[in-house]
Length: 374
Image (cartoon, rainbow, N blue to C red; front, top):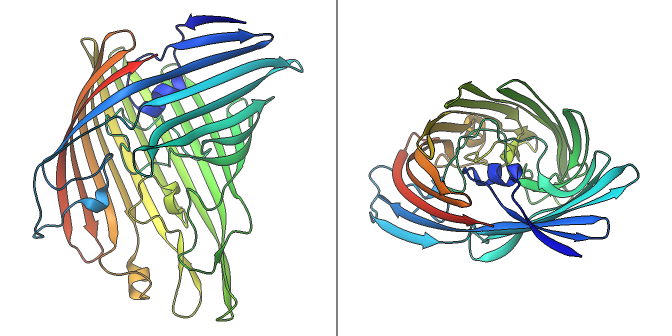
C-alpha cells in the first residue's frame, strides 16, 4: 500500500461548494484499488443587517414590513467543513467507483451528516447523490450555503440511476426532495422518475431535465382517497462568452413538483380540498448570473426567484393567506485564491419574501469566508 498527494481538481466538490479553488487529495493505493481522501475546513463570518437568518439563509425568517424585530446579528460557524473519499477498482473491463462524503450541517448545523454514499459500475449508479433532476450549470457561485432560489433542486437523495453518454434516467426517493401530499394519510406507492440530458459545444454547456411523480393519499378513517400525477421540467445553461466572462441561467416549472423546485416557498406538492380531491400546486422559478475574472478571483452577480401558485389552496382553506408565495435573492461577491488550496470570499446579499395576502419583507446579509482545502 502506498500513499501520495494528488493535485487533481475535484470538479463535483467545487460545484457543490459553489466557490472557486482546487481541492487537493491524498491518494492511497492498495492492490488494484485507488482511494482519494479529500475535504476542507471552512469558516463563515456572517452579519445580518436585519433579523437573524440562520447558518444559511432561511427566507422564512425574513421579517415582514411593519413587524417589530431586532436588527444586527453576527455569527461565525464552520459547519460546512467537509470530509470525503472516493475509490476506483478495475472490474469487468470497467471500474467500480464509490464515493462517501459528509459535512457538519446536520440538524441545521452542528451534527455530522451524510451527503454522498454511492457506487457506480458500467453506467449504473446506486446510492445517495445529487438528484438527476437538478444541476449546477445555472447556479452562480455564492458564499451562502443555500445559494440562489429558483432552479431545479441541487440537493441529494437515494436513487438508482443509469447513464449513457449525456443521457441519464433514475428512480428516486419519492418523499425526500419532492415532498409528500399535505395530508396525514399521504402515501408513496411509486418512486419518482427523473430524466436528464446534458451536453455542450465549445464553451457553451446546457442541460434539460424532467421529473414524473405519482401523488396519492388514502384516508381509511374518512373513506377518502385520491391520486394524481405531478411533473416538472427544467432547463439550464452556462456560456463562457469571453475568456474572462461567464453567463449562467436556468428555469424550472412544474405542477406537483414540490421541493424539486429549489428553495420553493412551499415544498408541498399537493393538498386535499374540502371535497376530498387531491389538488396539485404549480411552481415556477429561474436564475440568472454573470461571473467576471478579476485579479486572483472572480466577481459574481446572481439573481434567483422562486414562486408557487397558492390561490386555490388558500381559497379551499387548505393553506393560510400568510403562506409564502415568492422568494427572491440577489448575490454580489468576490471569491479569490491567493495560493493553491486557500480560498477567501466576501459577499453581500439582498433577500425578500412575499405572502399570498400581499405582505412582504426583505433583509440584507453580509458574509465572508476563509477556506482551506486538502
